[in-house]
Length: 397
Image (cartoon, rainbow, N blue to C red; front, side, top):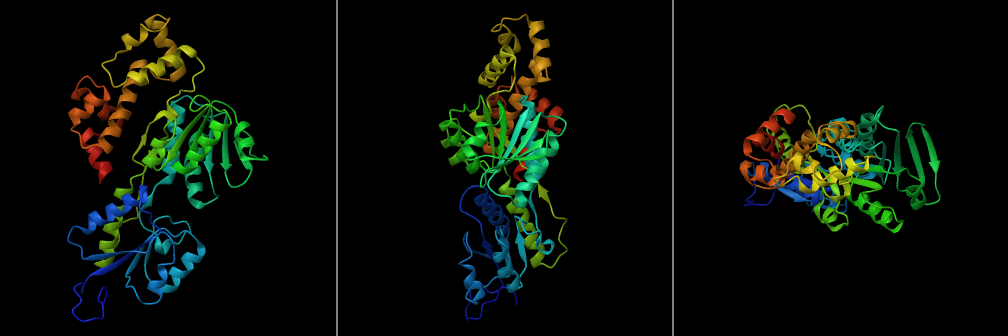
């Protein structure tokens, strides 16, 4: 019988044993744990056993010292996958790196993360782009697919940079590999301004520090965007790192529902690809790639004052242009009117506050610079087809 230990007086008779593996204690991994635990709290009798990030603890299961009805975590190597296969227990592989369909479960939609990064850079008027990764893994290709396909026909140059070797793929306009003596030489050879999406915050951090030593200005010459929103990394950098926040807690909750269906022997729902929640914008993306110096200055002023009682008339008065000329010029270089861009900036701030605080909708509207709560609700409905409360509920679970 599942979950029944052999020794007498076992207080956990009837419990199901879930073994977590490959999950760290911070960042998205910690959020996944929280989500699973939150679902378990709904009267589910599960014991969660932590096997750690590496495979040594798996020996306890192999030796029969630790019960396990199902594994949940990240398979990171073929040898690890083979050990799990031999145990013959179900595995919910959150990475799906080894393309084992019988093990599939809910996972993060990394293609959507790539698309989100590309669209953010395009909104900033960039024309040259790069995707930076350490390895040539399936997950990296998922991000790259969303990133590169979004940029087709909308960019002058797009590069794939793999940190662990000295080669670089110029994907657009010419599909060719280029070789460089060092990673530093490769960065120095890139066009500027350049928008760089890194596959993780750690990789973005390393590249930003190298750029600093090479005398490359961030964000003026290189704009960086990470994935994962690991706050200790993002906030410790100078400038601070913008990052795509992944909904780890929501993924963990959905995995909990998957486990409940498995243990009750009910048919499993369709597997979900959960899209990223939001871009948390910090200093590394606060420079628009706009060739017109007056419009670049206007965008900087708007971003610095977006949360204040600030109007487009206030902005126009600080520029050597008539209001009409400014509006026409702004639309030409940015693709939106100044008013539309200010609302877009405030919406980004509001989305971040809704996801990272428990403040009321009214409080968030004031924090984000909206004149009143009705203005924010109207903007959400127009641009996101949701109310602020519905957006918060959808993203948080």
